[in-house]
Image (cartoon, rainbow, N blue to C red; front, top):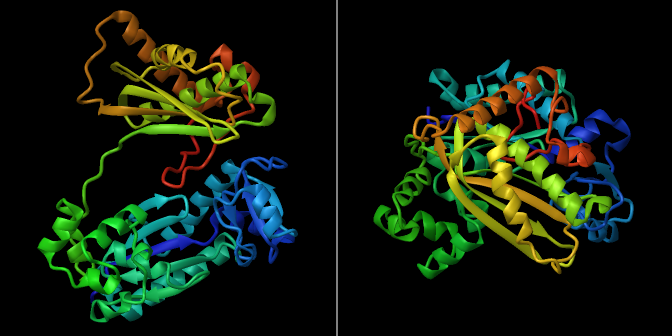
Length: 406
């Protein structure tokens, strides 16, 4: 009974949602984009029919059109993707409790007792696929991996796409991994690959052969011990994680690619990030804003301040930063904001002055009003011209709560 984890990965999620809801798109090459008819943006999802042409997530729209002349561009509908995400979780949960949501298109279920036997685990995986088809739709295909731990289950889910089901048991290791490239393993990107090369590791087989002490030396941390255990089919306790930042970014439509338009959108993004930070009971001590121009030029600035969580204080911290932006920096194409140096409610200092506490309480009161009556009930006057810009968006690792203002 070596199987402990079922890892589920929805295939080409955003594009699949569009094909599920719009049958005319099924079987056709589709790319989901932030905004239509703007060649300077990139594809945020591509259907499997578009991939043989070389269209992938991150492919520029102009390049995607060149690679696939029949490509259908679909404007992203984040609110729809969030609702579909929760419907899918409900379908999965009807068969097996969802242990953890990792991203908008990935989740993990833990297997217990008899569920860890191969026959029972495979039957559960097929039940999940059937529930998704029947309760949500036949176009919402997913690939499922079954393995002794989460890392190997994710690896298994990537081995057969779309609509795959792959099992890796402890007895299959390490041979089942040897055909993979190092970067096929979650957590090993190009920088980590270069570090492995520097330690004489050029293949997954060589990685699996390392001793625990060698892996600790490669990772330069206790994480090497976890990798040594994971690659051998062991399932050590999960590594505790801590939230490092809250942020948002947005590609500006052409009419807002001005200093005034970009600033207004930045404030809207800051309001959204601050509301989410409060929802997670955090306070920020640093704020970074950044822009990107069509020609690739980048600019950013950072402010440090006493930890706070109220929106007015954060806007005051942002105002002098924006004034630092060079006048010759060019029209911004993208703007973004990040709140970091986080503390939880328990570790954040209490406001020193009554006005600060009133501002904090006001921000929380507005959050409650937004939840009850909608995000457009009240907002900074400076964002009035851009209320339709920077709408809800989906970060792969952070799924918006349907009740939260965006």
